[in-house]
Amino acid sequence: MFRIGLLRMLAFVVIGYAGFGAARPAAEETKRPDLSELRDAVTTASKRGENVDEIRKALDALEKVLAKGWTAPKPGTTTPTPAELMALRQAVEAAAKKGEKVEVIARELEAVEKLLVGRAFARITKADLDDFVAEVLKATDILAKRYHRELDKNELIDWAVDGLYLTANEKVPDAVLLDRSRRRKEDLIDGQLLLGGARATLGTRDDLVDAKDVQGSVRYVCGRLDENTTILTAQAMGRMRAQQYQNGLGEAGVQVRRVPDRGIEVVTPYKDGPAYKAGIRAGDLITQIQVYEDAEGKPLAKPSVFAPNALIDEDLDWALWGRPGARVELTVGRQGAKPKPIEITLARVKRESLFGHKRQADDTWDHLLDEKSGVYYIRLLDFHRSDLANELAQLVTKLEAQKMKGLILDLRFAGSGLIDTAIGVADLFVDNGLIVEFRGRSNSSDKKMGHRTGSRLQFPMVCLINSSSGTCTELVAACLQDHKRALIAGERTIGKASVQNYYPLDRGTIRVTMAHAYRPSGKPLDRTTAPLERADEWGVTPDDGYAVNLPKAEQDALRDYLESSRIIPHRDPDKKDVVRQVKDRQLEKALEYLRGNSKPE
Image 1 (cartoon, rainbow, N blue to C red):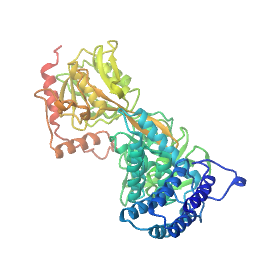
Image 2: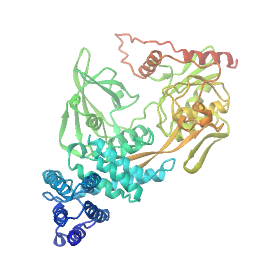
Image 3: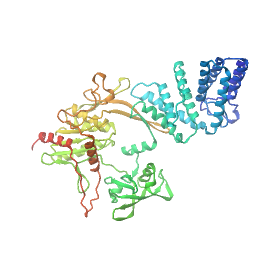
Image 4: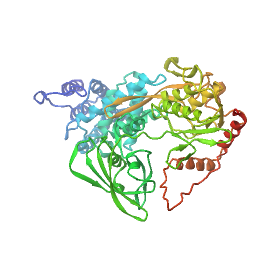
């Protein structure tokens, strides 16, 4: 009789499940299976004296049907999710281990059924469930196919489930962990089923809405791989593209910071940007922002007025960015003066990436470091701009025309950026030959070669590096060192030289580590790729006698000094600007070398 009851239950199950994510017309909707059928079967088995093994068979049969597809239940029903079915299986196995009778399972089913009824109101919608599963599966598929080494797709699915529960601040149920182990042994991995079951079990909740479920799951998976592989929100990608000047947005052209009890303070305007041309300077306070267009560039019926200190960062970005040509009114206060409105027209701003050692009276850079020896100085902020190598070439040409006899290229604290830009910078200073080699999946190799045309080889160089120098900086410094084009001074680099690519998702963008960089000499730049027998063979180390290691306090002071040197001062004629000086022992070491190696006229 138990088997007859089981067949009846399975008939309901097969009819009720139309496949994961499948749409079905309302007219064809039939009764969905719930725990009542399974409980009836258990009750019947108990009366007939059947043992726990029969219940295990019933669960196996129901699970096989679920494996073919599962959709979110309607509110008020007690249809189990795959994860909840796992909990029932755990109860069955526990009962079997203790030799208990079927009545125990009946009580377990009753308790779970009450729980399901109580949680029915929080069920996730079918559309949201489908979106979550599709997005996470797409991300794990990209990782499995594109990551720099082979990955186990099933392990990625397991991590995604773990990441979902972690995002919800919930413990992964023991039943899920037990079922994961069993499925591995029986080769029954179904990412669609496992992800859907886990997400449906957690239901609709504030900490998982607005793509937080996808972001949390995928970010955890990426974090298990390396620190550079991750998922980026649309807002984060927008900011990154703005750095690379690829999104066509206009901006007010100011770097700002929040100051408690004061509001939004201008750190510095960007040279030749709209705010700079409007007379806004470092230290000014922005007390009000008035915008005339929405975030999509459409005119507002009535201008929006904001107190900027009350805005979250994303809204503040929207207020200071927008369509080139759009108007923004900033109310700006300055010490000793009444706040006044300043209208600004947003424009694309070419931010400075090449700095000298001090600003001149017209806010341009002075690159001449030591007039007597003819040594000039160029500091790179980052490698985000695709035209940086060309701009650097033009600057070097200008300095050569000024009788430059030696150059210090300062890459300390330089940010990351575009690999092609770093290759272009290195190529500028070396003859033809290998610049860098990238090695990826299955020992694939991509060698980047230099070109003799346009190379600047006529003067001695020192390249300054430190422990904050990564990927792009390491690529340039290693090339210059292996080609014996420049002396390397400062501190050993950080040893993080990998290449990432970006792949779009519906709810973000996934950044994947594709390969690692190797020097022209063949040695690894990334510390994670150093061979076991030569574990210390990574990064870029200063040449013998030119290592100048700074204690943390001294390095922090140097970072702050270099950062503050970028600020465009007020240049108030009634007040003399105070220029803070910091002893730079690494720069002095570089200058010492070039003074002894510059060619006399």
